[in-house]
Amino acid sequence: MSSAEGFVERLVTPAIGEEIFALAAEIFPICRSITGDGVRRTLAHLRRHAALEVREVASGASVFDWTVPDEWNLHEAYIADAQGRRVIDARVCNLHVMSYSEPVRTRLPLAELKRHVHSLPDQPTLVPYRTSYYQRGWAFCMAHEQLAALPEGEYEAVIDATLAPGRLTWGELLIPGREPDEVLLSTHICHPSLANDNCSGLALLTHLARRLATAKPRLSYRILMAPGTIGAIAWLAQAGPGVQRIKHGLVLSCVGDGGGPAYKRSRRGNALVDRAMAHVLGKGWPDPVLLDFSPYGYDERQFCSPGFDLPVGMFQRGQFGKFPEYHTSADNLAFIAPEHLEASYRTIVSALDVLERDRRLVSTNPFCEPQLGRRGLYAGIGGDKNAPSLNMAMLWTLNLADGAHSLLDMAERSGHPFGEIAAAAERLERAGLLVPAA
Ligand code: ZN
Image 1 (cartoon, rainbow, N blue to C red):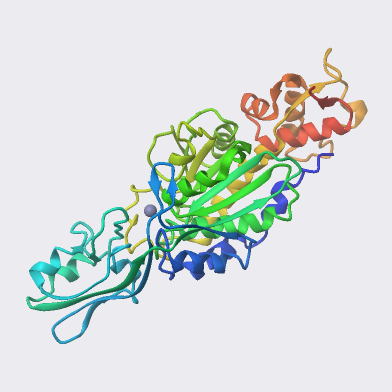
Image 2 (cartoon, rainbow, N blue to C red; image 1 turned 180 degrees about the vertical axis):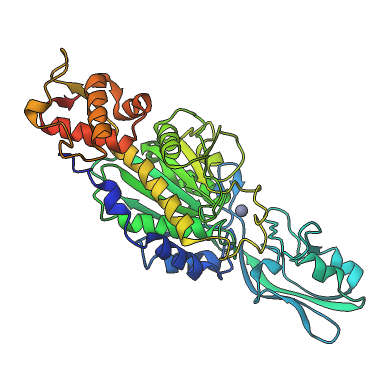
């Protein structure tokens, strides 16, 4: 029997959706950016569940064509009116300050203040999320209807922040399998209070890492939670030739909403992870979206840059930039739900199961069908309603076990779910009718 049998069952535990949601809610309030204590505090929460290592690189370090930026830490940010009443306050919602803003403490008339305020005229009740990482400046973000209602007068704008040499931080965990080939599972850790775009992926990946650590996987798993773009670049810059051990990879982005799901293929387009995700989505979802690679999106852009060309795709539910809550204060805890997180988790685990168990087998009895009844292999004489499907899966597996077809090839060709083919193969292997291909 393959010791990988039951891989899915070991990873999908009861109430997994609620547990992921609770962890997302726990880290939601933290003010994260591409550097700073927000990332460290988030990792401190996640480390209670999975043994992530905290890794850092100094500001000013050269990483390929980029330079690790200064560290940003926000202490306080607000706009107050002439009477000292706070119009907006980052303590209430950390989206109110543009991430990476330079410190400022000034008084200015409304017209001048407005040049430093982002709002969304088309979504007037929502606060936008804005960053300015690679161009210095300062700004606030607020609901357009609130901005439009501000009376003329003088305002105080305060951003009490430090932007100075420090370090860039990421979390990383290698879960060794029985084999050195690695699966890279990555998500970004640089967004402040946005539930779907950041917290959902971090919470899901943490709970997945925790369970993988005890699941005795065949493959090794490298978990990476790095700030978007610069974090992935910094990680790749220090990874060295070991990066070539990555044989499959998935970037997770927005995994907690009820949209999609969508999978974006790796640059290679036909890597095993691409085929595994397409198969799992096709079997498990009524209307999945499969997208070809493009050099825009999350950190698959870096992993799939031509110098690396790693087989890394990207999984999300609603497609980033397309759902109206994206990068606004509406991407809050009410926008994600335990059932959606659980469905995303199950989908990812099913794809990992394909990576774990896909292999080639050869029939020991290729001349005509072997006699299954004599070996007690025909299922469901008692009327199991899955029996016809299980029997067909066995016949397909026997027929295609020519050493040229992998189990995923068999699943694709027969239309059976991979799990059914893999189970049939294990049954036939135990009966001595299949052996591993040379
Ligand atoms: Zn984002």
